[in-house]
Image (cartoon, rainbow over all chains, first blue to last red; front, side, top):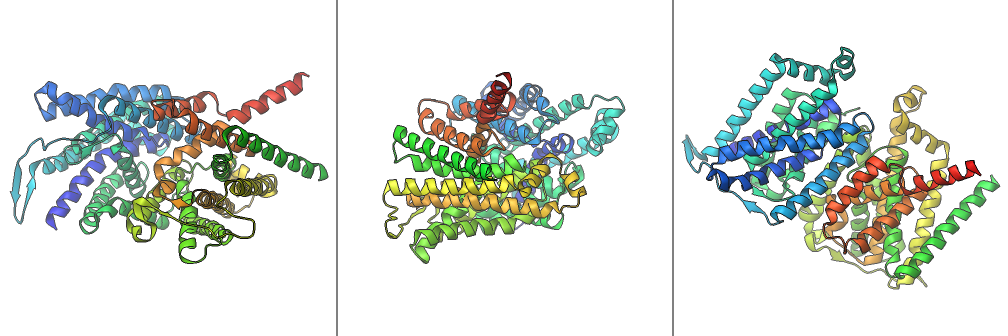
Length: 277
Length: 313
């Protein structure tokens, strides 16, 4: 049971990393960015391609892969998402979905459709009382907590962070202060995309890497955002770990139901607290 | 009033003529597929085109109809009409149950909650109830002969599907031109104002949602009548983009647009797809073009041109 909980915390950590970006873009721009799932996937694929060049140094490759996502996400923001701000949410959904279709097909073209797998980059186990866990999982959980702390500092202490938090609350008021909100949205978009890629990179040694790996995680992250509250960063943190645990515990008893259970929780959350936007 | 009725008859006649022509070109065996898909697009278009709610999980409702028909014929009766009725009732039922959760949301939430429920449905069919649904393999079924309505014969299916399309078209024509239709279009434009006028928008949205799910289930039921077997691909959430693309390319918010879009999508996916090596990329680029350059769709383009011609003449 303890290992199940540890597994749940690992999933929760990944979910947090992926969904915090989604929560930010969703909270500020009210746009569901389907491309978020594609960025998650491309991060993992870039990592695989970079490994031979860095002498199998996982963490260096991971860093480069996350950095390489910056131009990709900027292009998506500049040429597709930015042109749809305030036009229609539906078109933004469809356009980002179109990006996913194109991106997934590109991935299949370049890397092929067969799932690839990575070995554990650390490969050591750590012995705790009652249970032995792969060290890598502990590292993931620590990274996510560090990230949460860093984001907290970013949003509390820096000007950019404060503007974004204010825009989450009231976009028009911030704009009326003479601040170019759209530019900050672009920063948020790129930041969120980098986090998505980080999630994909960190999770790839645990699962297999395939072109459609992003679609399910996107849906689950969306459930995390709904349960945690739109644009609510603390809520996202808590709900990511809770839903991670839900997945792990369900998976322990009935494997195929793990992901579905997340949506059941989301439906219950929506019944209790409907979102009227 | 009489003039309106005459116009509707004319429109129905045009649809019949168009599909008869289509059946001459592509053969009567493939046409029912096209007609049934058009019914599905019409149902989706009611929700998206008229009420402005984009569902990214409409396959769930199609699949509900498909599986309800198959299970009904397996366990209750092989009568095709009762089976289709059961499918439509199942679609309406799922709309009644999920509606209160789903229709309160708009925009992105609406899209993704539908998708999440679609995912649950797919899981239920594929894994949880695989004992009853046949899981990944699906299952086949047969329909009894009722008089001359022998659904083993393709021309009969063609005629019946066309009749169903006309029925759906007529129903939606009535709905969308009624005060109810005006109200749901107002909800698309500005829901707050409609609420301010004293309407309980929740009820109207719920009814529209139920109508849309029922029509989707109707299309699913007819598809089983046509194929004779059901597989999880009828409820596969990754296929949701098909109906969205069809609606967009035809012209959302218009009944003719829905039919044109349905036929166009089927032509592209059935005939062009085998010549296009990277089909998903093609679909993605086509979607982007439609979103950025061609928002009104084919029907919007044509009707704009006709108006322009009428003005200059």
